[in-house]
Image 1 (cartoon, rainbow, N blue to C red):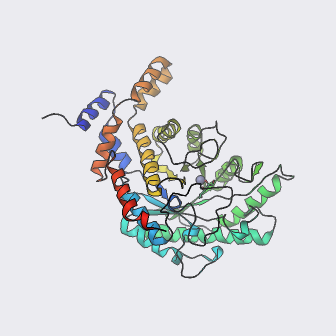
Image 2 (image 1 turned 90 degrees about the horizontal axis):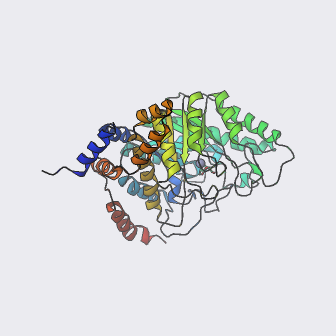
Image 3 (image 1 turned 120 degrees about the vertical axis):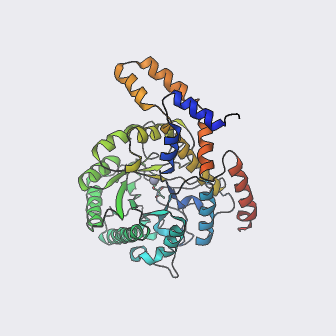
Length: 415
Ligand code: RNT
Ligand code: ZN
């Protein structure tokens, strides 16, 4: 009988010293946190007010989710086409409440429907306080606001979300990551760079002073270089949070859209891992700016995946996605972006790092280069298809047929 494509791919990789079975197994155990906000352009269920806070979703592709039921149905559809069992990432504005609940008054019960949803499917949940798209953040300042009353509101909101996260982690038996990102900054060169950062530091100190079992809740802080309307100064810069995280035992979250366009996160990963136990990531794709394009299978993504694998860091990294494209089918966006990240991880898992490192240390850069280039055209596709088959998820273009059907049957009927 002729060998299957996978069998011959397995032999080819073995000739490079790579075990495809091990790669498939590791990839199957790697959880990705799929962000709910791709499904509705970060609208949430509070109101239909415009998105604000230095971020923007552009496009008006029909069929966006308008209710919790629609969003859950769309997430289900996406997860059917994504191999493995993962986590979903929720923002505070996705609370499901009968009446309007102020963000500083949110309680675990307002996430009960999500907990039930996740339990049924064996998913984990991550949470985020929402410090944007709100009248109290109208001037773009939250935890660093000079007005104590406004700071108080946002501190209380962050505390509420941590309590919710800890509850969720316990209920699901999967550690919940609470990630804090704030839009705070100034359009013009500020007169005082230190004051806002001192206030942010104090706010964070209070928020994080409540201790939870790390089995249930862990925290991260997310930096940014700039945002729309805050081009000159960002309070929560990388240096601010990297130092804050190191000193306070929380995680630094690297969003690869949040640095200068020629800076790369792949290079930051090993340095972060050398000094902290855990790392959190938002995987996105910036095109010329923090544009949050859907993750594509491109070089920097592969390079980040390679760092996670060769630093043996998959188990200590919280890998989340963060993109929002409203110009294409949103369910397809989730599937394309998530599968691309998984493909990049598989590509990394199929790399003979031992041999490559040996070349580097011996100074044999010719062989290192030659081998790296050969690896790029090995039959990744066949191993990926095998991974999809074993996880009962369609491979090749079959998944896209399912998207078209869902669009025709479900999405097209939404007004
Ligand atoms: C914004 C940050 C942040 C948000 C989400 C919605 O620049 O990347 O992570 O995108 O929390
Ligand atoms: Zn982010």
